[in-house]
Length: 334
Image (tube, rainbow, N blue to C red; front, side):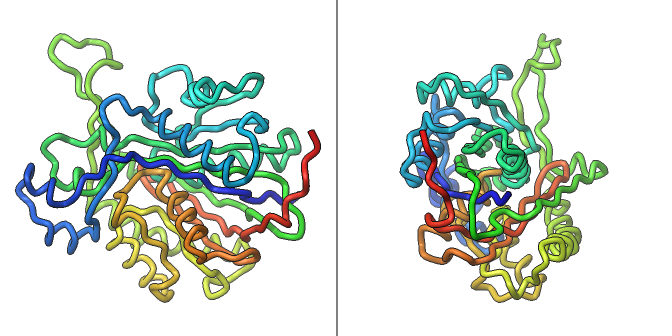
C-alpha cells in the first residue's frame, strides 16, 4: 500500500520581527545577521498565541487545500516540543478547537527540529497499516518563546510556526518512501531546553524553560554527519541525488542550508529556502518549506523530493517522497 501527502497546510503568526527591530534591542547589525545567518525577518507568536492556535490554523489550511472537511480525518497527530500544557496532548486541544468529536489524537515529542520527519513517519505507518485512512500530522512549535533573553543569536534565528501533512492512501505512485531515522545521544547537550528554577522553586517541573545551543556543534553535525546520512536515505529509496527534483531540508538557517547543498554536490537551485523570512521554526520548518515549493510551482506530480530533518538529540530523519497529484487519491465513500 502506498501512502501519499495529499496536501500541506501552514500557519504562521502575523507578528513579524525584522532585523531592524533586533538591532534596537541587541548589540548586533542587520549586515551581521544577513551575512552569518541569511535571515532578514522571522514570525513571533504574540502573547496569548499558543502552539495549539497555530496548529489549528495549519490543520484547517491542509483540509481546505485538499477540499475535505476537518471532521473527516480518522486520526490527528501533533508533533511538538512546546505544548500548551504538560498534559493533555496538544492534539486534544486542536480537536477541541476544531469541534471534532470521536477522533483520537496524541502528541509526539521528537526533540524539536527533526520532528517534521519523525512525525511524518509515525503518521505514514498508521495509514500504511490500514487502521486509518486519513491522518493529519501537525508539526507545530512556538520555540521563540524559549529564547535566552540575553542571547542575540537565538533571537535572530528562531521563529514560531506550524504546518500539517494530510496523509492518505494513494495509487499510481510510490508516495512516501521508507523514512530512515537516527539519534546520537552523545550530542544530547548540543541543543537542549534547560529548566531554570527560580528562588524557592523546588519542583523539577517548575521554572522557566530556556534554549541552550552550541551553534558550532550544530553546524559540525549538519556538515559532517548529515551528508553521509543523505547517502543512506537515497540508496534506501533506490534513487540518486541527481534523480531528486528538490532537497527540502530543515531550515536551521539559510547559510547552513546552502552550505549543506553545496557539500552534497548539488546545484543551489535544488534547495528550498524559507528561513530567510520566517526564521528557524523547529520541526515545522521542513514542512513549511515543502509547502512553499508546492505553492510556487516547483513540484509536479511524479517528482521525487528529498525531505531531511535534523536537530536536538541530536536526532535526524530523511525520506524520498514522490509527489502525488489529485488523481493519485481515490475518492473516499462516506
